[in-house]
Amino acid sequence: MHLPASFISTIRSTFKEDGEKFLAVLPDLIAETSHRWELTDVQPVSNLSYNFVAFAKCGREDVVLKLGVPNRELTSEIAALKFFDGNGACQLLESDAERGFLLLERLKPGEMLAELEDDDERTNIAADLILRRGGVTPPLQDTFIQLSDWFDGLKKIRPHFNGGTGPFPKKLLEQVESSLPELFADVPQLLHGDFHHFNILSSERGWLVIDPKGVIGPAGYEVGPFMLNPWNSSMDGTQFERRVSIFAERLGWERESIVKWSLAHAVLSAWWNIQDGMDYTHAVRCAEMVSEIK
Image (tube, rainbow, N blue to C red):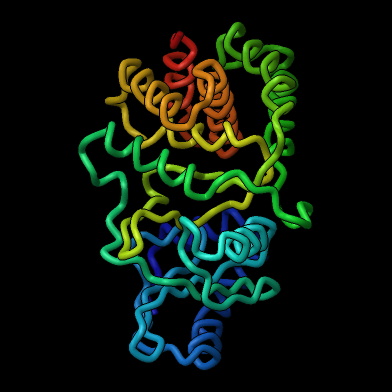
């Protein structure tokens, strides 16, 4: 099976030795899961990234096979999909968390929310999904990723830049740091954790989410990843402000809280990119624009 060079590189750089082992046995894993779940016509998707994902047939049913290096995020994703049980989310059909195996409902037509042109329409659909899934805290919270752990990573910024703030305007970083205690005072819930235009697909059951991170944290964080996407340079402050207004009206949340969570996530996203050696400028620019919203 031919695998894209970019996929191989991503697996190797992300998972190191475990990634090498995963790539070496991937054909065997595909054969094993195909036999186990009686799959045929396994065809990899064109945009492989951190997991092997393929369309397949299970009898007459179209399904999605997802195989990954067993890790914390994959385990949390499986637990989240089980808890959502198809409510506003893709249905998990079978899984093996220990082995990193998932068999998923294939969403049809499968159009990404990013493909819609009307941004107000996209934002209203996102609001519908947040309302549909509701605010529920599942049992066994330790099974899931903790949002507080992600934001604890911001404490490394100043040591990384020898006491400075690097590409982050000092006032901006201080604004996020001072707001976090207040933001985390809200009741934690189970969140998607990577809720944006490319993880929301059309289906016969309406618009549904895929690839949840399975994160425990205050509900307000959910809008953060959405605000930064689609990832391009054409976004402006007017668009951000319009989204804030729609979310505030539809969800009944305070505008100030939505802005603070959007700013916090933008800074967190930029910091992740800095650590990974990726371009962080868009996230910093978004943070600056969001900070100006009243």
